[in-house]
Structures are given as structure tokens and as C-alpha cells.
Length: 304
Image 1 (cartoon, one colour):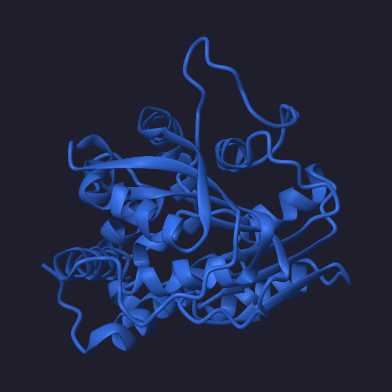
Image 2 (cartoon, rainbow, N blue to C red; image 1 turned 180 degrees about the vertical axis):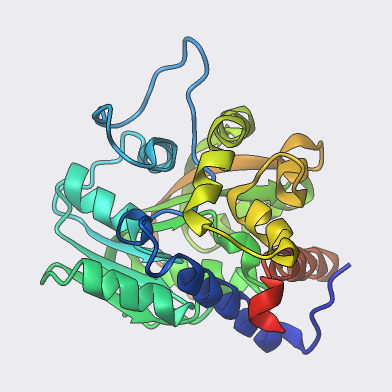
């Protein structure tokens, strides 16, 4: 059970603090300039086709880049305005600009130091970055051709509010490109919420074995980017990379959750009413998962 108290605001502050602290850990290291991705990554299994453009043999964070390619799939993003909610250090948006000929990108993240890194590393006219809350995204309505969310929504205590904002931000015909570790009991309710908001599910895929393969082969190496750390911080660092033996790795290996890709297309505008689609029990489960994530990713030496 979590040790975080104080409701949703405290959970959000805790999550923002965790990633601000992680930015401090990598700042000034040899990896800082190149460390754009925090996601668990994707490795194709033997005989599986690979989505997206090919990457050179020296491309850093290949598995993290491949995860984005799998999420995008065949979606045509040429000239698109893309909004990423939970953009972190901007790896996905950097790669979208590099590989998909998008028109412009907007990144939103609750961790201010991640936004500072993004602004400094991508100071271009077609890229903007906003410090903001995923449940109240500070972006206009109907402005996005695509909304991207990669491995971040499991930290949102009110995920239905996030889904409402996704639907609001998207233009009709736009795409929601979404992946995360999801509780089996919540996946279909999440889909029902989004369908009720005018989105049509066009692709669903369990990629848990591919994410597991990435963690087994790359977690130890990715952990090097965090440099030396105290013994008390070791567990948190293992959680950030999903190292074998961590709780997050156990979640990937268990039977209650799966790492899932969902692609939606917005087919109509819907004005949501005040009533919620998720049941009280489902909302409680969402909040508990968010609280657990904050606990697992807290760096003790930074929070003491």
C-alpha cells in the first residue's frame, strides 16, 4: 500500500517531484544530453514484423524508439500537429520530428525540469513545451491531429479527466496513440470511456512479451545513466528502468496487468456530461495504481 497521503493534488505533486529529482540525478552526467527516453521500450520477438523506419546500428535507446514506432503503426502523421501528454524529456516528439515529417509538436508534462530540458534541446519554431497537468491540459480544443500518450497515464489519479481532455483536444478525424501498463480489470472500462467520448477503437495489441524482452536485455545498461547512487536510492532506480526484481518488472510478469497499445480515431464531437463512466470501484483502482507508482519511483535521498 502507498505511503502517499493528501489526495490527488499530493499524488500529482509527488509524481512531478519524482521526475524533477530524476532530472537532477542525470544532470551533468555523460548521458544527460542524450537521455531523452524513460520508457521501458519494445523488442520484436523472433519472426515479428517491425513497425516504422529503420534505425542505424548506433542509434541510442533503440528499444524506446521502437516502442513509439509500434504505437504509431500505420498512422499517417505527415504535416500533423501532434500533442504529447506526459512528454518527459521529449524523446518521442524529437523522434516524430525526425522520422515522420510532422508539421509541429506540443509537449505537456507535469515535471518542470523535464520541460526545461525539452525547451533547451528543441528550441525550434515547430516545437513548444508546456508545464501542465494531464487532467487539465492547457491546450485549445480541436487543435491536434494526433495525441500521443506513452507509459504515463498509469500515474494519473483521475484518468477519466485525462481521457476527456484527449477527446477535447483532438479534431474529428484525429488519432489518439496510446500505450501503457494496464490492469486487466480497467482496459475495457477505459475503452468504453473513450468510445463514449466520440473515439473509435481501431487497434488493440498486448505487447507485454516485447516490453519484457526489452527490460531483460537493456535495464542494467540504462541504469548506468543514473551514475553512482546511495544504497537507499537503488530500489527507486531499479523501478525507473524496470529492472528484473523490481515491482514494475513483477507487474509486467504477472497475470493482472498487460502492456497494451490502443489506437483510436475521433469520429464525432461529444459534449460529456457531469456523470462519470468509470465506477467508484474502478476509479479507486486507478487512484491506487497512481499512488503505488509515486511510491515506487520516489528517490529517498531526494525526498528526505
